Image 1 (tube, rainbow, N blue to C red):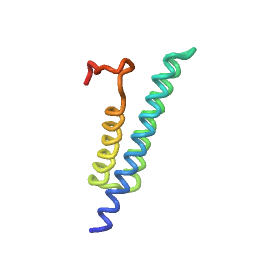
Image 2: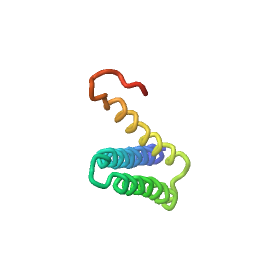
Image 3: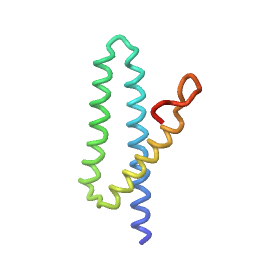
Image 4: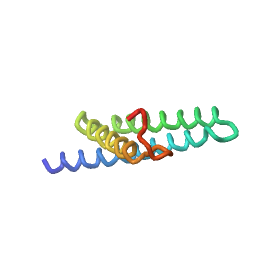
Length: 99
């Protein structure tokens, strides 16, 4: 029982770490749009994000992670995404139209 909870906690932490790295790459891609070669940088970073997520999923499956561990990792990923979205504020200090 405790082993199962520890596995779920580790999976959630791993999902949160992958989510944080994914969002960092997304932020770098958005910032690259102002650079000298915006399309190439954005596409390259998008491919890196896709490889990160697919690689993490493949690694989890290769290590024998069950459905519960995969759901815990997804929950960790989503928690980081929600936290980052709530932390983001519009530049003018007003409310964003997409919220």
